[in-house]
Length: 330
Image 1: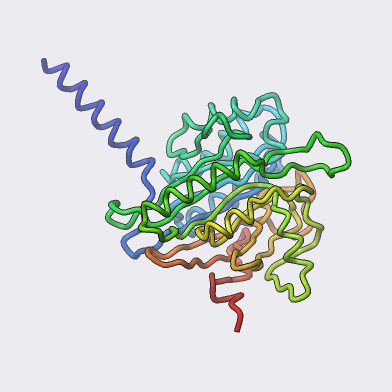
Image 2 (image 1 turned 90 degrees about the vertical axis):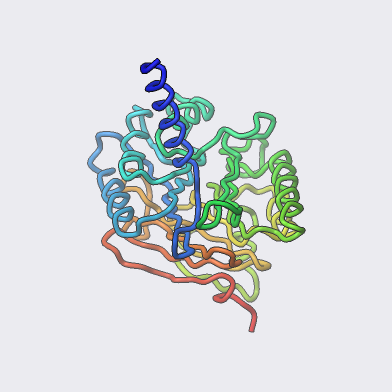
């Protein structure tokens, strides 16, 4: 009987720890901070990648985030599992919840997207999910952020697999959001809004390849962006309508991507902020912005607003922006 009781207590403790790992909530001050690392392009055992791990450790200790999101292209060579382990280790060691969406390169080194997801979801504090198997891609899922008392839902985080390469000739190189993903998002958003008495929850979206609206925003007649734009956006050439779905749903305040290593800008397009992270890796692939870095995003409980800036290795902070204040029409 005693052994049975001990086994039950151990099971209960394990369940409690796992539940805490998967709970996101605003802190006692009503803040929720997200760190976005993108395009780490990690090569296990290569000196050029040491700066990526240095950045991750430094940022986590300085910023103390509530959530870390890796927006694709984490690895850039075999061995895949060892590389992933080394990139995610600093987050896991600190007990910080984290999430992962795929870029166009993650599954190019002997493991499929499904195999990668099956591997990472077993890791401590990982909130990534394979998502609905009927959807295009692997890793379309939603993270809920509750109030400081961990009782009421306050914020939604949408994470998408933005694909890799198109197989259709004469349509560029890169993929775009598919109709199944857009319909899924539309249905999920509508259901959440209905359950909130018809009021959309404040939401953010994270994925790898930028939407077609990114270049539309930067080339508009009255375009205004904050940050660096040193290369043309490498978005998918077909506009399948994800931005339109987000704008019509009214919940998403900002989208955060990677993919283009020489861009770290943020701007406003029809009341949604379109943002890049900052290239987080070392000299394993092109990067002409200088120091590697990340994007810091902070939300306030119960408010439809957020603040964000770029943080570089060494601690310098660039391009502070507030939603909706910075780009609001006077």
